[in-house]
Length: 312
Image (cartoon, rainbow, N blue to C red; front, side, top):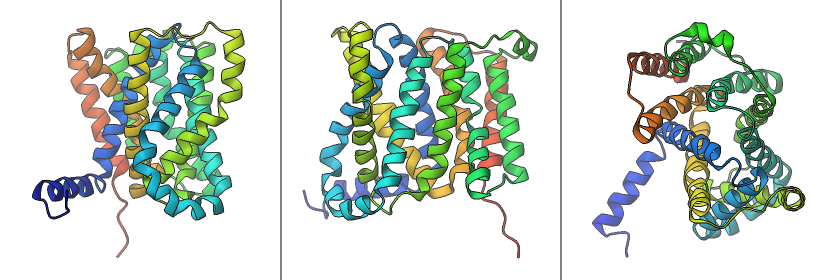
């Protein structure tokens, strides 16, 4: 099909437009990651965590490789020049974060996980300050605080007093470590070599999966092997396509366009989408606190992710 074909041209134009819409890209990311949290919790006890992470990234690598191959060949010299950074990002953002996330979901509740997810922007802000001396602007700090309140309104059903009764366990500690690691990935990913987005995710997916091989081998000797039933296979297909391939393409591009600190408040949109999915798929009834919480989250995200005004 030639580039002069109207349908091809329209599709290419739409793709170019989407690639330059950071807020939409980050909303897509949040929706995919909300689904991943739900699916990961359902998979707990059926698919061992390292196995799930390894198969997720291996399948995602196979999905993107045909699309990324020509870009990889062109970008290989730049990848080799920045190999240390590429491996570091593969270990932090792909291998370590997701294996720890799935491990934590075997030990903690969905409520606790969603609450902890809201701390993501704080870890990004901390790493930005420690590594690069980048401080939050007043708007970013206020927006993060406002959206965090909105998340709490949704998760606690409008009764913030129940926050004092939440108990944290082993899974919460594991997930906190995972968020700390992902915050490091978030602030360091803009330091990657100047390569195509498909080259970046293909390399990090493949390298991240390879890094998990020793842990998978150990898990095969210490945990029951995953059953090859339809539910588990559909779970693997979902996590390989949506929270992996699609979400990371959108997230990396969003961070590239607006920076880690302005992108971080979109972590707060994840539990909002999680609540919506619970309403749609689990039959929960929407309540006033859903609407109030959603409004607070979106107001906070809008305030925190706006481009700072320049003097003059």
